[in-house]
Image 1 (cartoon, rainbow, N blue to C red):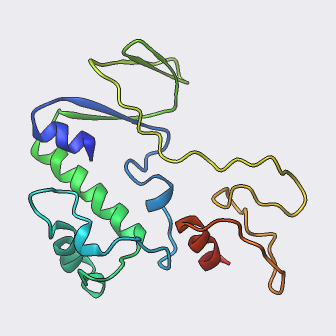
Image 2: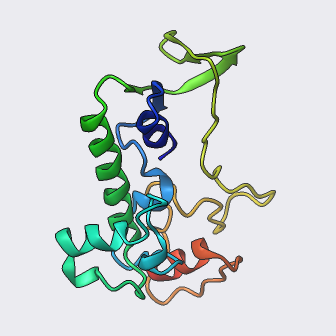
Amino acid sequence: MLAARLAERGQACVVIDRSDAFGLGVAYSTALAAHRLNVRAGRMSAVADRPADFVDWLTARHPDQADPNGFAPRRLYGLYLRDRLAAVEEARPDLIRRVTGAVVAVDGLTAVLTSGERVEGRAIVLATGNPAPRTAAQGGRIIADPWARQALARVQPGDDVLILGAGLTMVDVLLML
């Protein structure tokens, strides 16, 4: 949304993402409808002067989820963010450039991608999202990163599971299991 806000103010920017899922990240790329926002939909507008923007978007596209007091699926919020970015790109062509690639270094005001491409700017914003969980414990039955592909596949029905954590990821893991 930073890129959208800058473009709305006439500032050109480049958004670099290692995948083509710009704006989704781990939280909003989930396909599981049970993964919900932890804030009511009526408080999730990406547009400060239009507090009902997300609920209006839900009303138009997913009316069954358009309760301002409800907790909408996170995947829908991701789609909303992508639509907001696309709308700004359409209204302000040539101000947002998307680059698919991974940044391996920052050299002054230049981002260096694994491909060797260099993207220069007047400022750099690091919006890296949450890093993968780390733990000193390894191997065995420990699942350090529940978001890794097929991470929970080895948990079988009837297995006893201990989940360490108290946040949204803990709830997500419980729902996935």
